[in-house]
Image (cartoon, rainbow, N blue to C red; front, side, top):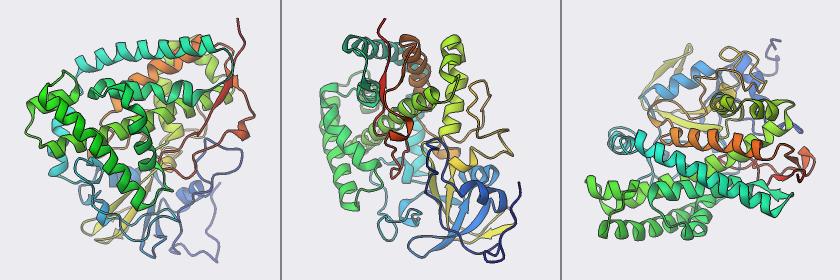
Length: 408
């Protein structure tokens, strides 16, 4: 249904970013985004610091900005869209943080890393993902019904896999997981974020020194041996990959399970046909869009959707609204594991599209059907409305997911 803008809200009246999700709808984007997308897929937006920029909610607008080199990702050029955050632009990206870089610096590091996510390495990691998944399901079975799936399965699995990829001793996991959590929380102060980065850097520096002395055949060892990266760059890249690979996949595993268990018939569809997993994973990425929002800054005047975005304007991109655009995905609010969800923006798009997306796909495609297959009666142990949601985090999901099952 089309809503006319009310006379009290003229078409160019600046909006603020909707962040409040409707009660009882843990998988839907914040209410207000859909209406905006229908009326004004590219709208003027008032930022919490007073900046007058833009909010893109339509699929074509969001995808266009992500693909356009006239928009920058450099943190220090961005105004942040979330209320209650730090005032003013963030500090520039630390060494190795590719998310906050533009070409050509970004291109050099991206090219270097992209060559390391080889088919051979992915195949070897797939075998380890299968082993690690089986070990954790065995442990759950031994413990018996009643676990927090986040603690027992969703968090340790990607942590072990990323350790495996980089050559990080798993014994050190607690140390870096704390730092990663502080980096991902929207409630962290700038000081806490910087302290977490410093902690990660310090840890990675120790690891880099060990790899320089005796390079392993893991990703960091490869880079230590084959590239002209400085120790700082190597440590920075390692820290960046570590933080990026932990939180996102852990939340997709937990939140994806939550969605499959509470949407009638979805878990059974995957149990009945595990071959459906690759398609179901793409659909979950689209439907949940846990990396929900990102920002770009115009480096020059850009014409988009009939509007002129001026140099210096920040554009907030609602990936979650774009992935629910009915103009791109029919019946977008339905979780359909049979859908072909190609073109979704769950991994982003353009030069910053998720570098580890193939690894994430391997983890999700292996782990979700294995979990559902091992526990045919898996279900929530508490009412769905009691599941604590990560509403103030850059990566959405659940804090805990209490589940249970019938013992055979």
